[in-house]
Length: 285
Ligand code: C2E
Ligand code: MG
Ligand code: MG
Ligand code: MG
Image 1: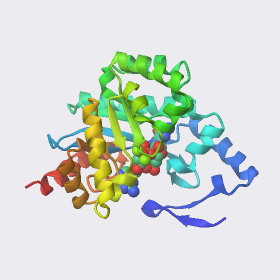
Image 2: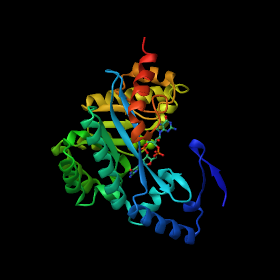
Image 3: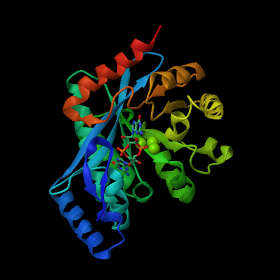
């Protein structure tokens, strides 16, 4: 296979997407074993509030500690898990680990919220809301400690079932974010009816703000839209101080990205929170 250099300098083989059925099956078997052996690892990336300068939440991002191939990013195994019907199991593990970690942080005195990504198949499973409520109460967390990130394409494709699951969770107090906002096809009318608490604008718009006046206009009008709907706007993929400055200028509420902090393992989170808030304050003034 062709060896590919990826972000972080990890060398991996693109087995999952080389089209060969045998390797696909092998990888699915390994993933099934990996889930059983708890080989999934969570990294967490801080989100900083531009107004208060505080990092009040982290997004949990899953990686797979593969026994031979090293630490694999989600793109290497999430599509595979999806096609093999393993997303329910994967999400249950991610959710539980993220909530355990969140309650640990709270015990240590930092009142963080944790955001977990949830894919289509999982959200519309009729057991999902019950599972979430059960895990929250088991780990003594208020529902508002959890943010579920869902992508808008899913919401369109499974509208009724997705809306009823989200409505139930929202009633309990769980926060709901539309991830990668702007890349799907939601109409505004539809968006207004969704039980969500935030819009998370896709990196594509954020990353091009410094080079494109159109992107600035899109980010600005999306911020206004979010505020008019009573939602807050999160910008993902903030990679430099200049972008941070533009986001502040257009009134964006929360920022996340390499410029503030990269996703890190749980034990590095306290340090990442400090670095994220200082990146913000260095810039201020
Ligand atoms: P996402 O939810 O949109 O997460 C943001 C992705 O952007 C993450 O990639 C993060 O590491 C990366 N990122 C953060 N800041 C920057 C930046 O400044 N610049 C750039 N270029 N990238 C940045 P990652 O960890 O590889 O995750 C990719 C996607 O995989 C996620 O996109 C999410 O859709 C999915 N994913 C991750 N964890 C889970 C999970 O537990 N369950 C499900 N269903 N999906 C997950
Ligand atoms: Mg996300
Ligand atoms: Mg996103
Ligand atoms: Mg994204």
